[in-house]
Image 1 (spheres, rainbow, N blue to C red):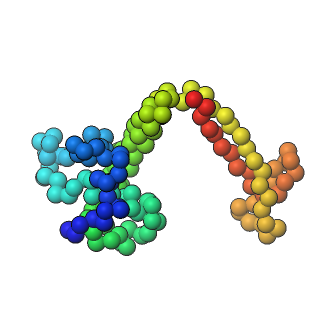
Image 2: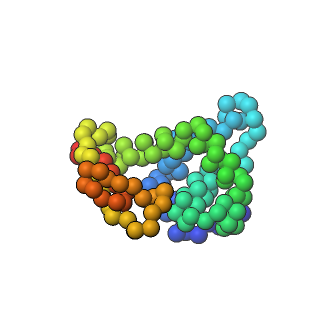
Image 3: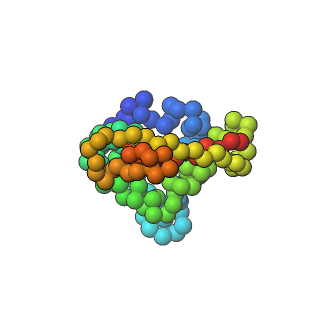
Length: 148
């Protein structure tokens, strides 16, 4: 495997600790650790880097640069972790850590909900709706923001 471009590596970002991969404790253990299955042959940091690269760039799985593990390997880890709820756990844990570093409660205690009616084009389709309260042809978008 080739070297990963430094701008794409998690090791150069502040979120990775100097002692190792900051997300590793949140990822499932290898089956070989639990006594069954074969040893893991890929670096989890490389898998996460590849998934984040795909998310950021929007490219197809098969167009993943050769600096990363094979696309089928990356995709299989992505699917497995998605089914196990690992991404939700990662998101929740990292969000709580960011809130705590900012001096806020780990969980949001209150929120504000707002909506906005947005005009759309005259050419209709499945994307066009009608807001009866404001008599607006278009879309209505909603947002929820935590206050604490």
